[in-house]
Amino acid sequence: MSRDGQGRSHWFDDEAGPVVRPYAMTRGRTNHAIQHRLDLIAVVLTEPHVGDPEEDHSLSPEHVRIVVLCRDNPQSVAELAADLDLPVGVVRVLVGDLVDEELVHVTRPVPPAELVDESILRDVINGLRAL
Image (cartoon, rainbow, N blue to C red):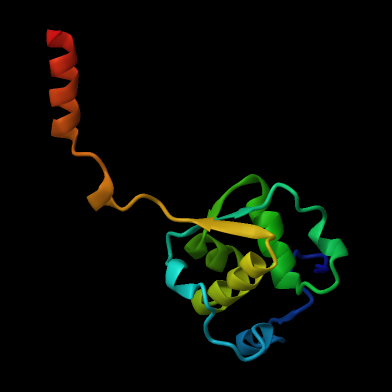
């Protein structure tokens, strides 16, 4: 995606807003098969085998940007939406496309209900000390 001298994308018009509307980026799709796994805190990471995404002409500029953003630093869906200045629903569809193409993978943080209770850990430590 090229940028002008002020760092703005050529796909943005200051007066009109984005030249390409979000529904056009997703080809009219509003959800994806894996969308149930893509909540705001789902973490997206580029697969290690992925080369330069700009060489893949089947990817949109938004797809390329997601792959680049997640290459060195895992990003949550919410962070991607903010960085790309796109609605979360659009980002979910785009990430779903990239998962299908095996360019990124998605992980979810461990839910607090599944974390070990701190008091249990203290009891285990105390029990080990007593041995």
